[in-house]
Image (tube, rainbow, N blue to C red; front, side, top):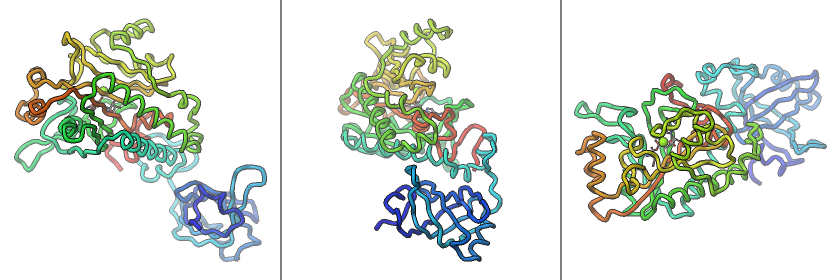
Length: 429
Ligand code: 4AD
Ligand code: MG
């Protein structure tokens, strides 16, 4: 039989088991002690009756502290009324008696919790968030594998910018030149589509963003996907299908965690393709009608994103942005004024989750853009080269993992969605 884990306790009723775990909480009422034991798969209540156990163990139980590590033996029983299982303890071995644990049940401020992130990760909400993050990562891989995408690992050290030079982390490269931490693997994926047609990467990216908002990290995880022979509308279809698949998986696999987080599952279950489509001009008009003072050539602020989806159950694709406020690599509409791009904005105020576009596939047009954006031509030679040897229409997009996790979990600040957040004012622990 499989080793005992708390999440499969129902398969072990009336059986003798061994649990290796941590004391998440405890209380005592005279001759009975109750331990909440966490084993990494869930939490179970262990019941220790003084009458059923050696005197020396009973004495040791009375000295147990929060987060002490223990190996417990006992019998699994089912709660007479509820779908809950308990461990009737017959033996207990103390592995390490924990020092006084700094995180208690009382309210702590975010700075204190972030300073203790190495411990905070054990709290039930934090455990739930990381479990959902894991489901999302797997669901992304699953969707891409089923749909014929090949994983191409893009470099992290790069000679050039992808998303604009103002947010680049710069480093010294052997005292000889500058290198930059990747903002997105997109440009490298564009090179790989002529070899594999549909490709993706998934890894950490870096933005030296000075913004201190609840949606910005300086290191975050991005999945970039890139497809040959795909135009703007094809791109949107893949994005909405992928998101729908992820939501389905989270609901299927993480009901326990969603309940711990008090996430409204009803709201999640409405997220199904097709999503709403709206041009940037239409979005600005709608926003102006709702009281925003956004102008027709402006980016959407965080408040605009929230306002725009306030009457929607599904995300909205804001497409066809004024070309001058979007990235250099985006293909433009016939008249050259609009970018064939999309920002996918999640409902409930979770903001922009995906940025994507069709790419400029004409060599001379792209060169013109690189010059207009004053980007170093030499460093982009390889990128221009791709347009010389069998250039094809192609499109792609990038998902910000932390914002997606935040949305699924109903967590407003992205700092809780990554194990060890990096922000403008935080590099520790
Ligand atoms: O919209 P962005 O900047 O798009 C790109 O980087 C494209 N090269 C992607 C591509 O087409 N392959 O970033 C993509 C997503 C955003 O929609 C957002 O979810 C997330 O990455 N993101 C951030 N997440 C956390 N902190 C930040 N500072 C982020 N900046 C972007
Ligand atoms: Mg964007």
